[in-house]
Length: 305
Image (cartoon, rainbow, N blue to C red; front, side, top):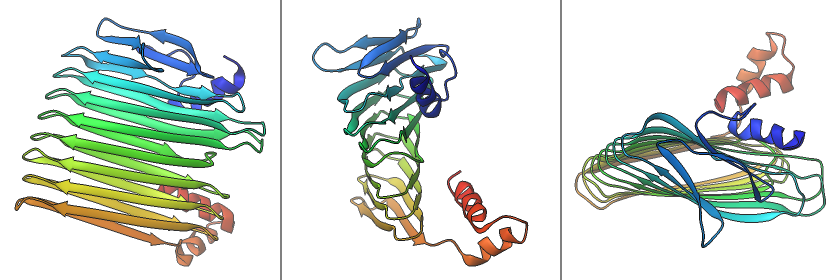
């Protein structure tokens, strides 16, 4: 891998070197490295581009890294990655995509990640998106995540996109069985003329299942964002969605939260708030010696933590 690809890899997966444990690194549409373990197998799909990640029942305290980096202008790809997590597991999965585009052609990565989480398993999933390069070609990422959660399972998702992505449509759907719990945290920032769309759909089908969806977003300059979240309570369950956003300059943000109670014992809450940075916050930080721009940056960094 060249230095640009290594930088992208560090941004999206926090990797300074080859990770321990299982991993599959994809660069410019080709495999750049793979490792499996006794408990985690990675198999190339035969019918379409992508991989199957198979985690044996009882696997504990192991990790899988599956980052993608693109540094070739004009490259477009679509991959399908399926995760089969056995029963009684406790694993961390780190994904993400970085695109460096210094050319005039559009570079694009679309990925569909499907999770099949076994009974009593715990999964932490981290997905980061990052773009760089001074070319006029757009950097486009459209991730789709599909989650199927069995009884008593737990999944924590952290999705991050802070800069450099010109257009993204992020779709997440999930269905939960009895006592399954899903926690999603999204952090998103757009600037320039960028566009970002987040669409979450959760079906709480099982008794005592629950979901907590939290989005923190900042839109600067002329960028636009759309946030859509729908939680369907189809049994005795608990669901909560929260969208907090900061709007700046000439940006536009739309938030469309929806909850549907289809059972007498479904307890659902949604919250949405969009506003500008309070002037007194900036003034307070400026009295400590920061410029206005530095004060705004500090507030945004704290908001997106």
